[in-house]
Image (cartoon, rainbow, N blue to C red):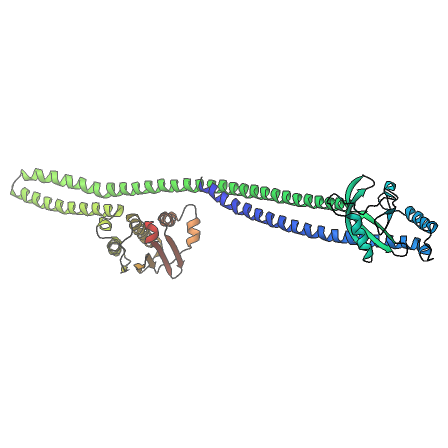
Length: 455
């Protein structure tokens, strides 16, 4: 996997994980809220039905109160009371029933086949003695009772909530009830709606996660493409600068060889040829030849010095032999000798441990800085310092020249090649380069961490 792909993955993965955690948390909270809402609705719904049952029974009691309060219990009065109760209903499955305390069914408008039968031992599908529990509730003063009974509209057993009251004077238990499957169906619809809402929320979160991942991936891809184009442009510019630097260096070497060494060698050749001719002459000519050879030897020494100077500019041997500190000290001495500006070198600590490439980079930065000072600064004094603190080595070149705008020069397309080369050299070895300049002078500070460089 390429680096940019890893970056995109590391950007998308935490987003997906966060959205998944949020989705799980939202789902958990939604399910908990749905359960609480269902329980609240169920409780409220049943409370409403219980109150409704009590009202129905109260109305039924009032409808036969004139007969019950008359104190009569003859068959005609009881038949009239049963007739009145049988006519009371609320919906297809809402009716009233009457039993005596022995379990005999006295009135059932929806199931007349049960009338006259003793249902004391009747049990529901779960084996619960239904009529016995209803009569026990009535003997206890009346109240609510849950049981299972055949629903008239479907002829299938269904859970039912009943409310019964005793009618002691007649030895009756009178009651009614509502079937709870309608309540369960309503709650099931609520559950289905809540599940649909939760599923819809999860889909929205999933869609958001996909869109976010696509947005991050697209942004990362666009950024990578943009950065790749910028990097290609910088690479092309760097390659062009490298080529230009090489051509400039070759041109300088060519000038040094042609204008200096080549002319000296030609002059030496001519002097040697003239000396050889004079050696064949008289004593005076031989003496002149001797003086010519001596002068030629002096010129050869100058040529060797020029060769050493060119070699030192390319890469000083002292840098490999004695180290960075000695090379910088030699550089400062030569600069002071060849220019009108004195340069003083000081060292604090040892630069041992720096790789050869880091030594070369710091030396080249010092060379470039001195070249810039000589060409542009107009300085009167230069300080070169090499200091070590722990694993960090810092090279500082300070002058008291006119100063300049480092950012403006570095960004100029035709200027600041030397500064850019210095920065790129330090970036290549993981170092830091800081340039501060004002009217009072310029300070170039290059720092290298030995540990980081070795790693």
